[in-house]
Image (cartoon, rainbow, N blue to C red; front, side, top):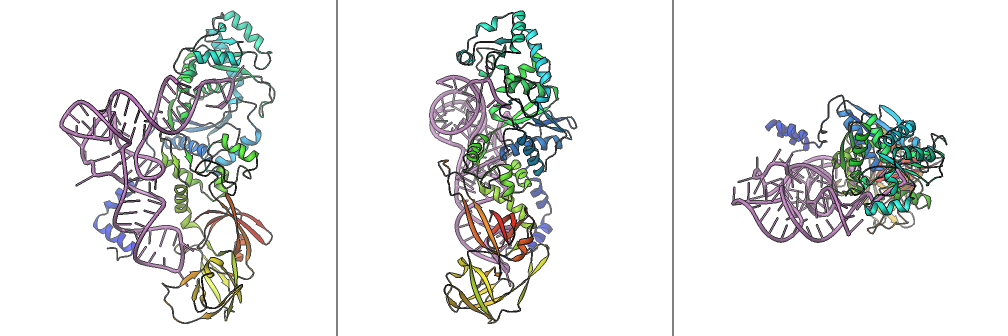
Length: 514
RNA sequence: GCUCCGAUGGUGUAGUCCGGUCAAUCAUUCAGGCCUUUCGAGCCUGGGACUCGGGUUCGAAUCCCGGUCGGAGCACCA
């Protein structure tokens, strides 16, 4: 059976048992069904905070929420969780939308939490009137200590009238002087329930709202209200929010809002890469990396710049599922997924790293007609040989006079002398094609090409490796000069690269993977 | 420290709810081979795992108890 070609094997197998292939397709990995999902009535949300550029973790989260909304013919809402004016920046709202668009994800509605400031205030006043909240003046440290100890502060016993007066005073109080707290359960084992702050004073302009407001809701409060009023049916989020379900459900209960179903999955990381804004931001600020799109980063932009396809992120999401373990993905998995995606549709070009000029006698006038892809029909190109052409140093350094090398799709050459330059002559002697080294070649003048080669930013101890972005120089065939920025191609026998910049007479690419 | 969550080969994952059909799935990685005018793709073969200790049971990856390890939370961040 193995003696047959793959196609023949396939046919043979199909003839024997057609169901073999049906079963194979069925096994394809997919997401589990969503609990209590009603077709046409699922509403999910993508809730980024505009305080940085999204990374692959956000990408997965976006995709989960997008996927389930589509699967059940429901809606997905892009909602900026922008209730901390000190952290949000205009730039990030746009960047997040651009990255979502790059990922090929769409949304049915876009909104900002900060658009609902009046609603939060109304809810706060409702809680106050119901006796479910109180204005606390104890100060942050005291509150923190009391919450830790599980005991109440005197403010908790205030009457509704006293609270109303304090609320009035809070409108003009200085930052930090007062805070609105929920009357929860000060002794709860779930520490988020211990009378958390729900509204606080922040004197800082907001990128969307300006300085129209100074009483800002805390995340749990805003989130509970938003998820309830937007009619979110399913919340898919990572597990650092686990303890907040009880709190947010309780808040909605007091406010008469419906609860969504919450599914948690764990945060995941990629080995050798910082996978959180908290870790990435300082690297950008101190210049360790060149920016949010540094190809060593697993930001959406970093991945894009490296030639990773959006579909690879979908596939990765499928591979992970809504896992509750704490995965540490190996980069090779991302590469393997991406390679499968791009290999069949990616054109091949010649590029020689660390080029060595080779003078070849008798090569004038020869021209190669090269396929853009070995098996797929992606067109052809012509490449004319020149008396001196370039080969990769790694391909010639171990050669000695008399050796024969095959210039791919052109001709064979016999090496005559090896030194600073190599000289050779066209050889027409019959050779064993299986034995001979087949190498890519670039005619003179080649296109000077710089390859940025990213490697792990972290070593095994999670320390930053300074020299993790290598630069390799070489010469590419002239056609590479006209590839639009963003094109992913394969440099034969070298690897997949993405065109990063086109300058006059020079090209820069980023190495994706082998 | 307290609370919660998790633990299947090098990596990711299926199976765990409803114990036997699991001498454990699939992918990736690794090793060997085939094919190939790419070191890519494809194909074949192989190696490799149920965190540990008790218990329940005829039978445990699956149930119970305990330990270990890992993660998260304990903000007037989200």
